[in-house]
Amino acid sequence: MTDERVFAYMVGTAGSGKSTLTGAFREWFNLKGLDAIVVNLDPGAESLPYTPDVDIRDWVSLKKVMEEFDLGPNGAQIVCADMMALNAKDLKESIESFKTEYVLLDTPGQIELFVFREAGSFIVSYLNPQRSMVAYLLDPVLTKTASGFVTQLLLSLTTRFRLGVPVVNLFSKCDLLSKDDKRVIENWSSLDEQLYNKITMEKASVYRELSEQLMFLLQHFGESISPILVSSKDYLGMEDLYNSLQMYFKAGEDTLSD
Image (tube, rainbow, N blue to C red; front, side):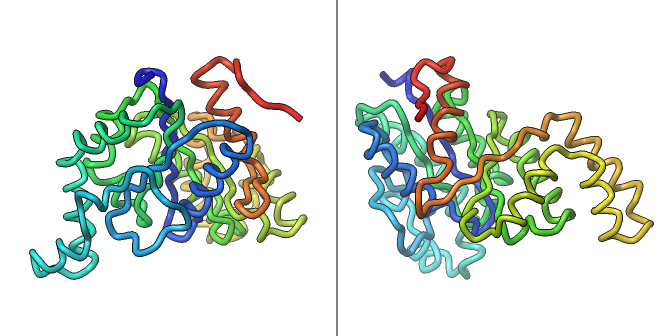
């Protein structure tokens, strides 16, 4: 069973809705009669919208690190991020104590603590990189401008580069977007001339060459795949996310359809 587990990491900027989506995705699994466990990887989480099956706070406590090392919250978060790697063995053993095919991992609120610290890539590699995928949450508030949209895709691409596993892009909290916003963002997802023209309008002409290079970079690395629109309120997009996991790791054997 262990070698067949699929690990889905929820990654995104602070406030993008990672914890809420993690809980909602597990609820969706339950509604479909499927099994999944939830792992909290945020040592500083004060409250969570779900009850974790495995919790990094059982081994690493932000509050205790602050007290022991006389650190502020930011410094303590960095120490905790590195301490997660030291507890990777306990984390793995705890996960393997559950008989489940899907492991949903909620990463720290600040993306840099997991993606840019070595501890994040170490944990992914230690648990099982061949069976891991990142669900990258694009914050709708940050994607309403063309430059913000491109910046989010660049962070997604950086996440793929840093963690070395496949990434599926999600537009989180899409219930906050109007129909017009959704239509514009879906058009931008093709990375066509319309997006480029919009970027150059937002930025001064001095950035035109940089805009061209960024667009070429995204197109070259295949970031033109349309992100999945998801909402934790009504489970919109959950089936598409599940099917993405199935298509990549199980060749579509158990994909769901209406």
